[in-house]
Image (cartoon, rainbow, N blue to C red; front, side):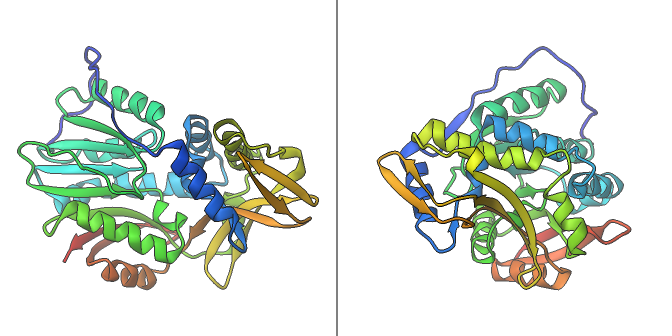
Length: 327
């Protein structure tokens, strides 16, 4: 089994940069703002500041997914390790601070390597360096990239198979058609003998869900408004935070949380050389968080050529960790 973490001399890791360009970001943003209703790509929430704020969201009392998923991983770690098997390369898209993967590293047998992928290169490299110090024998490859676009997964010697680790119910942050595209991309990444270990948030009451995405301390609001600040900084936009308010609501028809900002007045926003008109009360969606039943997620997985092999849930059946086998 993988040895417990121990400190060692600092290992300098090389960051593989496959991140998006500013021109691609501008194209994505303008595309979303031309739609009805308007939306912004949620992946751009995660610059360095956004990644830090998301880690704070995970610590708020209202945000149940993180602590619930960690509890499941800790209680089922041995079973999960047996499912994954020895000699795997673990790939974590949207790695962030990579806290949850440590639970797996402490139980996986003879792991061949760990590939961390995140859109925020600086945040990723810092997290990877910390992991490298704690797991000195582990081959770690940090890749700065948007995992929604094609990624060259580095080859690692002695790897028997690839397994994607996608915790946090991040799969719910995409409309269902895009979620299917993400799962199909993971299926291509792992190949015919690979697997996917994924966190999937389950349908529950609206009050619990809306509180989780609109915490009393305002961290989620700050996280969302940081996106507007990023657009101002990187795309020369002129969003005025004082002219918007934050809202998170549960769409009972689609079983998803819809987060975004609402324009408080009629206004024009400049983005580079482009102008976007907003009416009073108009909403710009910044994120969705889809909630699933076990059956609805299994159906989505099958469309991507995955089969659900095992499901672990908490006592309240609020959240699930699922192991999917490529078929």
